[in-house]
Image 1: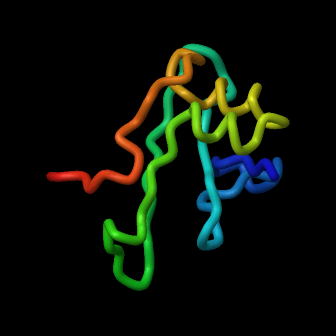
Image 2: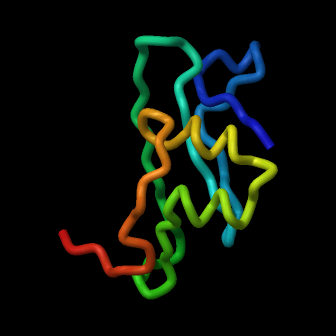
Length: 90
């Protein structure tokens, strides 16, 4: 599923998108040399014990049919190991 974020609602853009629970999501800019700010708001409360950050390697193993997209939304297209499943500290 692909949605386009933006304020041009007449052109099928949405100012925000709801991602259902238990879904993996990613974001990328469409125009080269541009940028965006992406945030994630959770409700009700958020607990790190319920959170998992997948590495690109894990995602490609589980979803090989989506390897091109996984590589595209990982920084610089490289699959890097993440601290998957480890609690993040502020």
